[in-house]
Length: 322
Ligand code: MEV
Image (tube, rainbow, N blue to C red; front, side, top):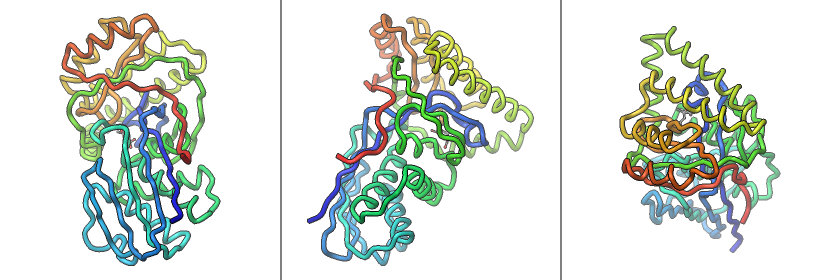
């Protein structure tokens, strides 16, 4: 049985969330917690998916029915990715897909985008189609938009390119910044955020208070540009200050919550260069940028607020074959 195994990293937004949905840039890093997919040709004519991490077991459909009839929530991105690949590159062979995740889909690490990218990469390998990184990004991003309607694509780009990237919505600019010399501490708030819902709430706020919200986005853009410069110079003190300023703006947007605020305050009081929420807000994770000698203190401080530390390394490799 012909099979391939592909792996893509999770991601963490460093600076620029929400504003990136409105055409502004952001900085995102890929993390060494990965999502793996094994794709095998079965010799049949069905699409079969096992994705235990999202409670999908032996979900089966004839290939001709992809995108039709009901799809379990946990299978939506994978099924759409297979359908989009099939429509573009055409194949008739039945497939078995098995996913295996090193992180919970509740963390906000981008499990949907990582699994979408894995599927497109795996199918390109198994059917021997030469796809560039940009081709994989474009088809994966189309898939994500087909399923969830909103999203800048920063998570898709992170899964494809890896490293730390400067990203402009839709992949208009994707620039790798290869600096690995920073120490991030990630704290999980214990609540899963509904990203699409929060993005809709921000859109509603923008309708009601356009000038204010556009002012916040413009200020975030400046922070991202400064942050990129500080990162290239390894100026972590100023990068941390930029994170703190970004957090003030995210609070003004109304997307932070008490639990995240406590974790962020605790990290700063324990000596972090800076700390902020990461992603849509409303739950998921916060990040602290730590001086090398404060890692233990900051971890303890976050834990003392009830946050759960998730051990990660930043700037991980993008999608690859195992
Ligand atoms: C969510 O992780 C980040 C947002 O900027 C949405 C997006 O960029 O797609 C809020």
